[in-house]
Image 1 (spheres, rainbow, N blue to C red):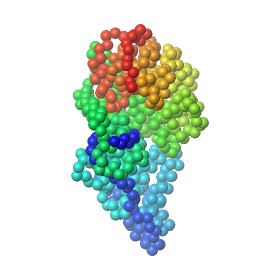
Image 2 (cartoon, rainbow, N blue to C red):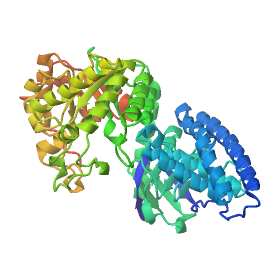
Image 3 (cartoon, rainbow, N blue to C red):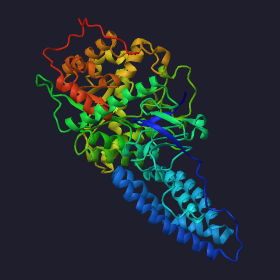
Image 4 (cartoon, helix red, strand yellow):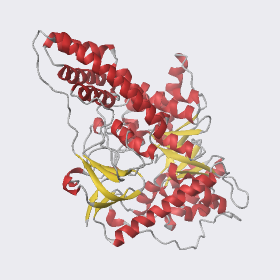
Length: 562
């Protein structure tokens, strides 16, 4: 039995034989030509471009049918890039001016165009380089004789697809009836391929690296796309464990069908808001499908990671605006970028810290880098004109931090007003309660905040002095610890006294076994992963809250989770 570990990007499980796809090579021939036949090469490119557009249109239709409208949009973008005047003029110049073959001309033009997009300063365009690369490979494939849409060989039997990587087009063309799951060496959780996998509900693991070998082709394997494991020749125990996870997953699916449209009301009539956490547009879409009451935590820091340039105001504005409009008036709480600690953004530079979790992160970093902070706040303010938008500051420990952040926000409001840019002048401003300092002084912070959101993951880490990323401390980092629960209760009580809402987010919010206790403490909002919305709705509807939770005299013993 061999276990290969990667990153689970689309939850599920599967058992079957592996079908390994070799690395997809560019089939376009890169041969130079003389000056006598550039017209022929241009004609070849023109024909290939038209064929590529037709393929992309078919892909758009297939993706819309199998994965939804948002998934199909990437193929609309690629169609536009194939026909882009600048791209085509670069190809023409490479053919006629530099004597390149059509395939070489396309590759060189795509590289030049990609560099230009990155240098514009408008991150809406620089983020399209992945689409441009895919479109260019498609044209080169056609020039090399691959005139078919499908890059995936047809399978007679269902199998687990393994590959070096899968393009969005390859993923969209997967036959869901015959694709049990897919596993790749490369890839990230926020690539187009991962997004498509989630939309198509295909279990998927990416980023396994070199441990995924072609010699496993034909082997029986188990995919655990809950914990990100591919097990070659699994034993009976492993199969049983994965089957149990799958059973719970399928029960959750049935739960979704039964509870969509139901209200979040406890057995004794108390109404609770159940919101969802999100990090991208696809998470927002999933939250809407799962009937969430809005987005209680939009983790904007993921817009800053794994990229070559910082996201600009226009790019961020478009993302926040789209999310606000998709929610149709439901709340969208955007947390300012919580960078630092485990969420590293190499573009920020700075000295390496011995203990980043206790270093320059969250609001501390933002107040130091007001250039980045101001750009983001302007984008949030502009988006607030299109929906029910709030802004929230991360890792606040002192009142002066909140006041400085609000002062910058007020300054930006004045600038936008002078420029006659629409925004919500009364946009709610909240803070994350993630440190013992913030919880203990929550009565003071409540005087300047419009709402609280208790981040139980970091709060637990700091209260219990247990590094949340250290697996050797499993069992020591339980949010159910009395010290953590008491600080949650204390914070919720201060919020109630000040007349502001208190939300619980983090893993504890999605723990159905403590849902009733959190509500008794005074939490009127819970923000959970989109897939857990209906699970927590069930827990809320079954909760019987007869009296307020007394966190000071609480005498229940909660077991640690190992």
